[in-house]
View 1 (cartoon, chains in turn purple, yellow):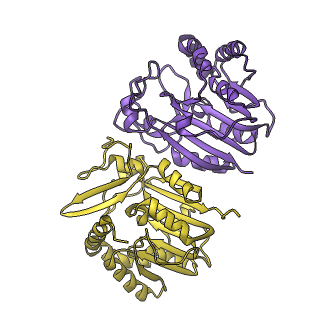
View 2: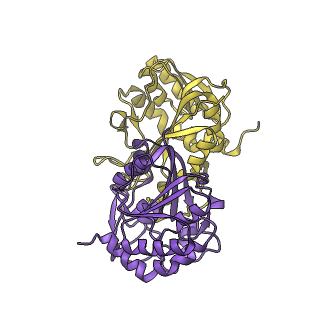
View 3: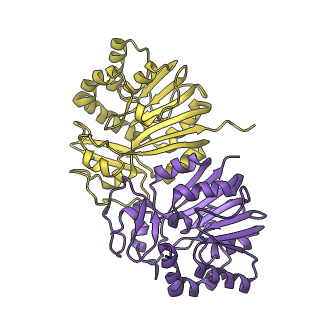
Length: 250
Length: 260
């Protein structure tokens, strides 16, 4: 039986991400999330030159590609969906960036302890893997003093998202108490923790919390052609996305 | 430095609130044997949120009638200083301190500018005090100044979600009533009184703490317990609301030792 998340991303890759991958790989600047807010504005990343990087839930691998272009020594993309890794490998060949790819779930990564300086995830493990399992995995993979940077949907956006396949509302659709595991219609399994739970989990796994960046859609941002579950108008009033920056204790 | 207009407004509204409620409620709070948190009196024994206070020097910023400082003194703090801008609340606090013989020091001052020396405390504390009534850019800087290196800042405030959902009049519901964008200072008017509160969202608080040399140790979102009933005086949000969404937040941070 195929994993529901792998199944959903196999379909999404055929429908959308495969065709968009090369344009994403071709970009020279790192940007974040649905509204492509530039890294130069958010300053979420530590310096990456010479660093060993692992991306947990890399999809078609574009974020890893950007980090390699910025001078990372080694970039390993980990993803459980073979179709997305095929796209990533094709782009890697075409752009000649020398990324490595591993087919695995971020909850259980077949790579050695303390092998990376930076672990990143952008709508990857950050929402598609169980945080109680992938955060300890990230801690294991990082060297002491290594950085963890991940982007996820905001808790507020999840609270305001209806069960049906409709855009985010201005009304709380569910309690925050106990929120954790979600399965939306025709989708894989997502995990969404509130801020307090993220702080507890990161601290319990030996991370110092450096930053929480709540992202606002730019004034001229438009609702995304595919990821229209939250409108640009909503995301200008409330944060729809957020980035966590943490450092493994030295 | 001239006093901000909002300090004057907040003093006026707390003078009224003290006569209406906090003066009359002070004795029961001071008499409490157990430390409890917030609107729903969650016991400290359940949260284990406080650092060890035995032998520590503590300052409470925005102490009101100073019941929390009294609990910390009884828990073994060496010195507890309560700072507040409202003379009426300090009068109540002094009367209680005499009655219970606890030995607090009470100072009339604004937590944004405290007339006490640098690096003289191990714990800076605020429960619905400076944590919501003062400008965080000012009072957190002041907290950093007052703390010894490695000292702890602990504060308790309403959640951002509560701010977004509680209307000026009437009950909190499930609707977001204001944008979070630019949320920082809130000025309100109610029955002829005016007040100002400060409610930057978590991401902004993270940045202010970091800029003032703090490392975040703990951040908890608190819900009302299953058996909670709506508070007699602080009636919004209701216990029912606060069982579903966190109405209160507890923060703990440590002042980084100054690097040489």
